[in-house]
Image (cartoon, rainbow over all chains, first blue to last red; front, side):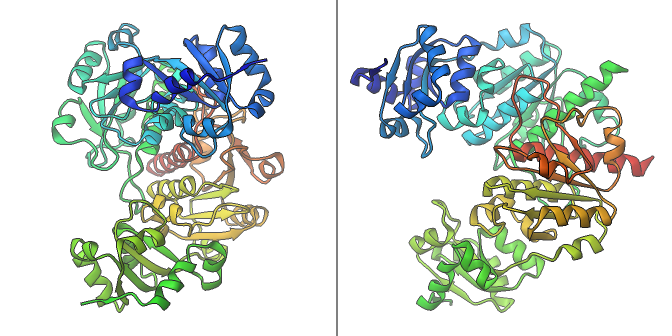
Length: 270
Length: 270
């Protein structure tokens, strides 16, 4: 039914495991049935789909959906799949998708009420988890700024659990310009900073978070240095009530984003 | 200054990379300066400390603190350290510690107001991150129930970022008995369940969460099956405002635990 993958196709796909080559082609690899399904559902251009023989049976409906949409479906061995997916437990389906990121102006034009802004977040698992949490909390966009990891990195795509295809993502932005543009679009830029004197639970914080907010999250090891904190309107800490020194980046981000989502909904009801 | 590690010591330590052998010895390996420092600070019995030559210089103060406390310090190569630490980037310090878990009755006797209860959480990184978030949110204990991962697994210890040494941890508990004992101690058992009709942001939820609460978190893939949900007094979902299907377990747990911590503090102030 489907042809065995040609070596030309495979060579082209293999190149997309490298960031520089992804950027040249403006294409990336999305692995697993969830990512493939979300990519198809979001109208992302898919130039090819690789499947293993077992996955072709297991996910027959999804594979047929792709073929019906005109996607070139090719069969590969489990070994080739592991290599392309860069994971030890690939799920047997991998799509070659066009980049989905949008210019920052698309985001600001939409006047979002909640944005997640990552600066120098380096771990792809963390970044993907923040993207997923931002999507869950109803954020209008996620921005990868300064030296943040590439959202098209396989681990980030996987950790985002489909969210990469759900909401506008901005890539390669400069934090200074982004903070300015978001502020001009009516958002308050709030830095998540464990050292801040003000916390999520302080009286008054919820009222401020009910306003349109862009949460700024820094590097997982060193956070936000003073020159980046200066770009925010204020900084707020997730309060530490026990003896932990800090939270990990993705869990702190989820708590902050949900604090805003809740505050905004409560304010709208009142 | 410190002797090179003896082969007997190394052999004994190597055994602790396996769960069954850890359980027999009731000892585990804690890697990295943070874990070693927290273990020393918490009064955990440490039967040995392995250091690489560079780490002995870099963490001279910490190594001296261990030696002063009577811990046998032995020098190992980077290669041996990698093998013991089971990570590609060990930080050069690894302690052999006695188990720190306590019986459930110690927890219930303390009448905690917030407990994290994991049932069949299988990924050590997730479990360690939940432990860290529970500590940060001021929880009084964390319980690893049913087929949950071993908290003494190296990845879990690392993800807990020292929190394993901060608050009472119960291991190997049966969920049915644990839920009953926590209820008898005055806690409401609340299951985190994405399919629940009630959410964290519903009016009324915050008031209930202001009461002493044990949050029950299920497996990362299949959540809580009906027979485990039945053990809870109620179930509550983290609301999904966007298009994500769900949150990952550790981020959902952090949002739930902080919702309780905030509600309890607000109620106390009023």
